[in-house]
Image (cartoon, rainbow, N blue to C red; front, side):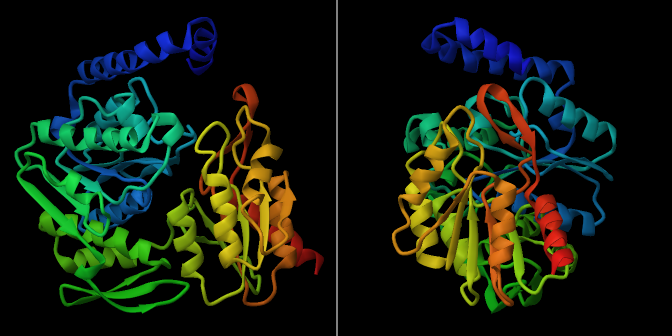
Amino acid sequence: MEKLLRTIEKFIPRKLYKFFQPAYHFLLAITGVIIYRNPSKQITVIGVTGTKGKSSTVEFINAILEANGNKTAILSTIRFKIGEKSRPNLYKMTIPGRFFTQKFLRDAVDAGCEYAIIEMTSEGARFYRQAGIHMDALIFTNLSPEHIESHGSFKKYKEAKLRLVRQLSRSKKPVRISIANIDNEHAPAFLIYDVEKNIGYSLKDVHILSETQTGSDIEYKGEKIHIPFAGKFMISNAIAALTLSNEFGIPLGNAKSGIEGLSIIRGRVERIEEGQDFSVIVDYAHTEDSHRKLYETFKDSRKITVIGSAGGGRDSWKRPVFGKIADEYCEEIIITNDDPYDEDPQKIIDEIASGVTQHKPHLILDRRKAIALAFSLAKKGDTVLIVGKGTDPYIMGPNGTKEKWDDATVAREELHRLIKNK
């Protein structure tokens, strides 16, 4: 279907194609609702949206629900899960089009799942991939400039997100809950709709007892909880999940057990341990704010960064900004390929490098070689940050070509090679 659409797009004027594209997706979504018998009415549906933190928040919510004894389903950038069965999302999009979401919900209902946790994106909203889903709750994590070239402006990007809150307000569920991160300036726009509960959450809701490069300890409603991931952004994502679980009446002890038992979130501050004497972190950071916060999380160690995060055909304004931030925080900067699509990858790399003025960056097109170089430069106690792709399963090239890829797997392979050759 993807190849067919690319072929059709070549022969139809672009303005005409873009005009009819949303209607096409809306029709498919509603057809899916009919074919799969409106499954969202038979299961508790939790949506999670925002620029950053969606996948991590989904995993925190899932961990809490499972610790509470509930059977769950997940649809996210990282994976598709129904009950005990889980598989990686290899689509290079959070919510695939056509009938995927409605079939997923029907399968979840038929498997006896009580909750479906769905990561909801602006692109999905723009193309009506979430149309026809009756939500019980929607969590808004944050909003910052992203997908600007795709949407046309930040205002249009925000409007795509706000469609999801309006969708919640139209839901047929008896109690609809909107939960928003009030530490973000855009939160008020997500808390003004006609739903039964509008709830804000904040880092101020907890007392941060300690922060290290391996995790944090917080006090929430009198309970000490260990969050096994570094960074204040992970604390914020955990608070979102705790706020929701409180509204669902889940005992705090079960919520604590769920969060503390979550040992890994793939591609989100994922720690790679293969016996090396330096830290290796794989993270999906792809915005100016997320780059900065990631580097600040590891402020107590010498940092080597492998930067991608700037795919072809979109948000080119970010490229020198990423270089500038790395220049501010990191001792070694390696700029490499990410997803060039139909752009010249060397041009993208050069544009990132234009923001680096204090260091001499290494420019290496081959992403594997870039990661290997980072490890060869690392000294005991350093932190190597492999930034941009997270769990992305491919490096996307011109004309729809793609190369299988996984940052964590490649990192492990190169660490083995380094240790073996020592």
